[in-house]
Amino acid sequence: PPLVVADAGCGEGYLALEAARWADQVIAIDSSRDVLKRARQLARKRGVSNITWREGRIEELPLEDASVDVVLLSQALHHVPKPEAALGEAVRALKPGGTVLVLDLRAHGQDWVRERLGDRWLGFRDESLEDWLFRAGLEDVRVEVGARLKGDPFTVLVASGHKPGGTRRAGRLGAAVSARGSVR
Image (cartoon, rainbow, N blue to C red; front, side, top):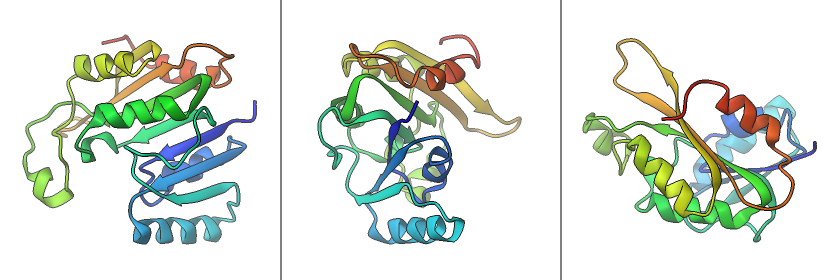
């Protein structure tokens, strides 16, 4: 079905561009005006026109209540002071039945990322991420390992949940994500 997707913390827009291939509309949000400028240029270069670019913080999304079907938070939560607040904002912006999809790092000990990459969190424990999603008001919460390369100190977690009510318009997205492995 046609979906409205918010890519919260979109960075240079690579995931927003991928989502634009299957979504009716993508709203890409980032706090950096310079990063959004580069993302817009990349979208123009690739001929993608169904993305709206907005400057804003993921803890205060520039979205109306219950206005999107999917909120993507890819490698964004570990950059904010209060990840729980960002998840609460994602749920606020979701239509009933909508999906929050989080891709972020599992807890790690690579302290160098704080200074070099501006990370505020050294990833998240599976249980913490699961708890935050439930407390944000989501149901059918899943937290799974999404990717881990041999020798790489980072493991990517894929977490998802659905806002109660409505019809799950993003059902195939959630099913594809949750088919990757067991719930942690």
